[in-house]
Length: 163
Image 1 (cartoon, one colour):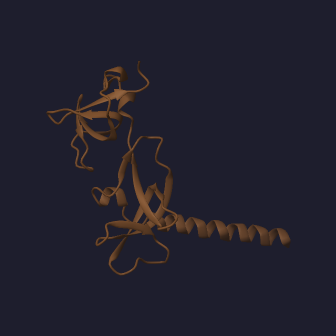
Image 2 (cartoon, rainbow, N blue to C red):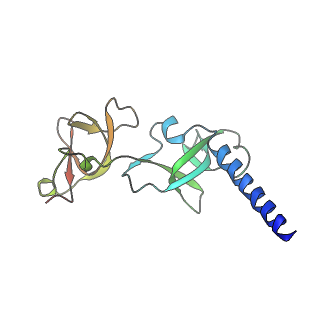
Image 3 (cartoon, rainbow, N blue to C red):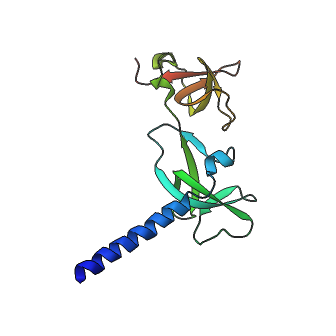
């Protein structure tokens, strides 16, 4: 009898978790739905979060969804990758992109890099890249961990691992 109750409890717990996970994915993806609200990051720097959030248009912030619905004036979304501020419950959505320097010929050796560089997404068409402006990219979005923007608006990315 004790074993049957344990199995039933386990099945019930699994059922509840499964329904929550299934419910979590019924909302639109936050990062692809609201341009500019998420940050680009490298392929290994985006922890899986998998939560529902409530995004407020007035504050342009996403907070963890704590109830069954969002408060008035905010809208539900799903965030797959991101981090949560434990004090404010504000969620920062992350978009993991492939590392540009993992592609042959996309990056120059790091010794050619200027003293100051940035880390962000870039939009590449062929071997020419520009700073990424959200998801509005007609080429391929890649992450540059050591980049500079040139006078003509194009981007050069430098490979820290290549000497």
